Image (cartoon, rainbow, N blue to C red; front, side, top):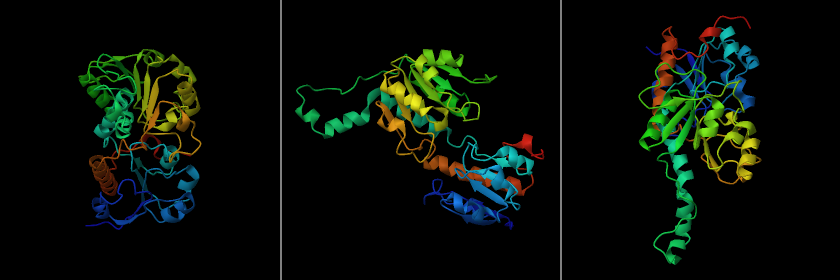
Length: 330
């Protein structure tokens, strides 16, 4: 039997722009779905919700305290830094996330970005379409050096499910894998890997890829000091969170040739601001936060969100990220 719980989705458009129905969620209660919610409408739209679903809308302590009917929050993402989970816990509100729904899509995008840095497919496609191959006296030409991945070292920051997937693919390319994780996993899996200190990873790797969550402790940790450790031939790839990187320092590193290039699926402020210093930096390529967004991954996301809500309604919420704070004092 369908419950009478009031369910509100505050920013559902990127999950379902028209190809990924919310039907499983809609069977669970009285469901209202907003494509986007500007800050000034947040309280009005969330006021009567028992269950709130969101991705990028921010819920700070003041907002949470202004929503007395709210009993449960499920993120529409793996990350949950947009919600004050401590304040939610103090109010007895469990917060769930959506783990491991986009692992293969994110790992795939990591290598799409790396291969673009290594081969510059886009540059050569543009060149051919501009007539340069037609006019070329030789059967072959290249606008940039072509870099072979076999034998290079990839350094993975964060070794959760996505980091492990990146390591698996890197091994298939013949790359040596090193990694840094605050807590070295007891079972790192079948991929041959060495765990090294952070500074050693940046100094050793030919490719550094960020695959870790953003926390208050690691915000901006990729800074001038660590970038200065890197080889001038090395690449940096970020498919995790833009706030992990000091963007001014990275732009300076690119302008001064301290590193060879970077590929970013994320930036610190999204949508990107017109004044982002990386827009004018050389050897910097972007995708607009799409690593997670394959239809297959978004379908898994909706399924897990529906399971999160159903578990809450059944009295045993799953994927709760703030269990340690539930019932604590503010």
